[in-house]
Amino acid sequence: MPRQNKKQKALFEAVAAGKFNEVRSLLAAGVDPNISGGRKSLFSNRTLLEGAINLRAGSVKQLRNLLPSENARSQRLQSEAQSSLEIIRELIRAGAQLNPRTAWESPLYIAAAAGDLEVVSLLLTAGTDPNLSGEAILGKYGEMALHGAVCGGFVEIVEALLKSGADSKMPNYRGKTCLEALRERKKSTEIEIWERITDPSAEVKELLKSRYEAWGRQRAAIEQLLERAA
Image 1 (spheres, rainbow, N blue to C red):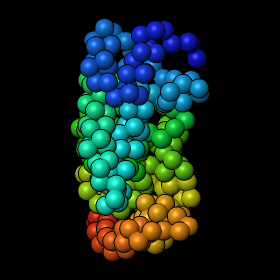
Image 2 (tube, rainbow, N blue to C red; image 1 turned 180 degrees about the vertical axis):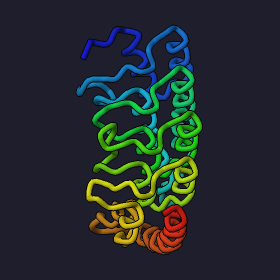
Image 3 (tube, rainbow, N blue to C red; image 1 turned 90 degrees about the horizontal axis):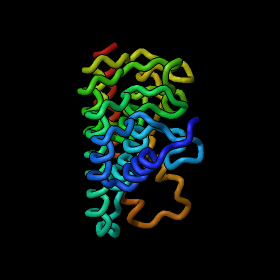
């Protein structure tokens, strides 16, 4: 992979730091929005769009999982998420590829699996293919965006993907359709992460209780959506 020049490196650094004005200036100066970094770069083989969406996904997930004792972090995380969103919009306006062929998750998968409805809607409106084949872009663990949203329990994202033409019968790496994967799943992917805590505090136990209750409702709603789409 060719070495990045100074302006390309500056664009990577500006995206990673959430510096919207710098990103806009560099793109306006003609820096390619479709450059990708090498294995040792800031985004480790990801394109700028993938990197920006991944950064926002981290903020969105942290916001959703804040414990009451961590509320002081809320304002900073909201600011970071908003900066990343503005950068994502600017990259798309500048012509960033919506369906890049990389070894990582697709931009749509990253957003869908993170429960980021705003970015999912933005990508779909911009023309992202909701049905990327396994030969084109493999999502994490070989799953497509719809699988990621289904397993996360993100009802609105599942609905948005289906309305945009996502194929509910497309199998994942285990040969399971979304409906089959949902029916074997007893908990959301996020609950599984919280359950890894070996000595959970009272706050974590309370959060898990609410998540178990919510998963039952989410699972039922998603199952109905998938049955209607079948």
